[in-house]
Length: 329
Image 1 (cartoon, rainbow, N blue to C red):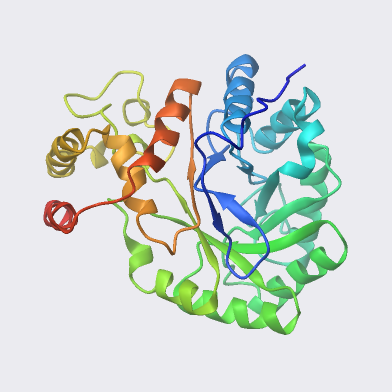
Image 2 (spheres, rainbow, N blue to C red; image 1 turned 90 degrees about the vertical axis):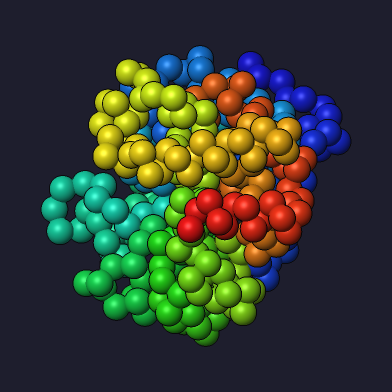
């Protein structure tokens, strides 16, 4: 049985207020999108989860379709809870999401009340908990009125199955509309989750400003651009990499010379700052006070520690920021 580090809140982790709510989130959170599925080894991913909690990480980010297979990340996290983390349930923020394809038939994805309520019921069973701390609409659904999606989220909170609600992958305009509906339903949106990295800066095109105006927190996922913003691809494409295997969202054509020229320049700057490229990429996101937390994936405890170390160097000089913008442009 797992026994938690008694100094987990006294060492390195720092926390930020989550939107207009009473909770804070760690600057680094653990995402279970990869490495926690049915194809992965329990001994490895359980140690990553325990290391995260021992390091002060209190936010564990799931979705109903995480795996592979879909649902297996939730089930595997449920096993981790049974092995000891459940003793610390009240110290944890556990989230899940629904909206992408999960089961056959017309109700297996989207933003309908039917899909969202069925999804959270399934997620609670797989994880083995009575409630989720945050439940997200994983994506806007063009075939469902946004009012239906938001009212379903509100009812899920009123039913006691979730404490807070969030949204993910919504545009600035959709975010403002969703926030307005949720406020009227007395279940304010406290957080938005979106893809953000040095190579994917779309949130800077209005979303972060909208979140600041609405007093909504922001969770950045894919901070390392599926591994591009690491040392992995600087010299060549490893045979065991996601790009080489054509697995996940990183495709071979994305690892092109134009991108890698930028990555190599960024790596040089990271070395000058005394960081790994991955650390600098995460620190760069956290430099913005509008970001609540960065969700990182990890395939080992060593990789997780490397990510956590990024919170020690969040300050960038104006010259460094100018260099980064010049490289990325």
